[in-house]
Amino acid sequence: FWKGRVALYVILRCLGLQPGDEVIIPGFTCVVVANAIIYLGARPVYADIDPFSYNINVRTVESLITSRTRAIIAQNTFGLSPDLDSLLSIAENRGLYLIEDCAHGLGGSYNNRPAGTVAHASFFSTQWSKPLTTGLGGIAYIRDSELAKRIRDFYNKLPEPNAYDKIMLALQLFLFPLIKNPEIHYPLIGLYRFLTQKAGIPVGSSAGEELRRPVMPENYLKKMSSLQIRLFQKRLVELEAKMKERKIAWDLYDNFFREKGIKTLPQIEKKGHAMLRYPIRVNNKKKVLALAKRQKIPIGDWFVSPLHPVIGNLEPWGYKYGMCPQAEKACKEVINLFTDRALSLKKLTLLYKIISGESV
Image (cartoon, rainbow, N blue to C red; front, side, top):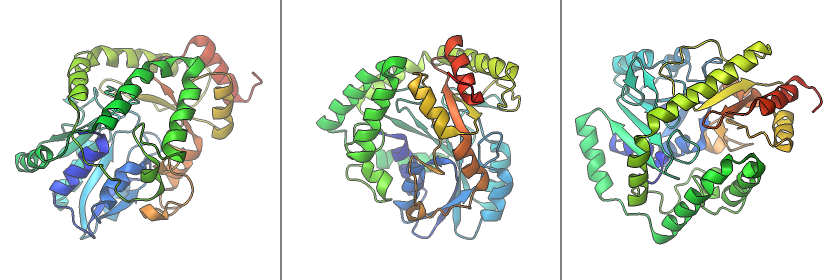
């Protein structure tokens, strides 16, 4: 599909989601996940997260299930797999669909099975910040043959991307390698956010319209272009090697920050996780991000709110502050490091000083 969110929307539509139905999602996600549910007239129900894995807290899910619940969406946050066995058991005992949001998880695995193949259905993103990029892009993976047929039939009726879409995609693919340069990382990020969030120009994954209100934009439903498909097939062959590079970066960060006494993730069995981003909690997120930008240290701010990147009133999406206290706390504290391009020891040392409140 043109984007991962489109794959999710089509999965939900072909499941027969109706107005008034409910879908449980984590309150620590991207707004486009909630949008896909609301576009069908259904209601997202927000579950809090586990403060250590940043994934949906299984203990909170069961209490949120009602007679209207149709599905549970389990996000693979930062490339860390959720507790799919427990969630699958809950879903199957209640006659619900479990959908894995595998936007962060391509290349990972869960109990020796490829990420995205354990739940009843899953969707992946190949947008520029994901494990494998085609600029934009989304994929649906379906275990249920009947549902897969309905999705295939629906897909075959979708339009191809138009000429403007293809030009903007080509521009994004051209600029993406440049973002890895620390000297121009932040200027490019700033330009991207201005165009998409302020000007509403759909040059990237999200247009301003999607971030202002949960109303489906025009031309939302599209296939993946032939260019994206070719890039995906080419880069899929390179994925295993890329995962090894991410693990090296993850281990580097883990060892560095543990030696410095910075609290990081509890020791996890890294075998299997996609490790897309390395999350760290800090005391003053806004200040750390500002100082890192000044020192040209590229880091991420996922997630700035329970429905990233929307800040402020989330009630149009049915979210009220206080619903997910662990998720809201994480939004105030978590920064993340890129694992596809490990920071140098010099940059890590600078970042440590910033986190610790030392002068730089």
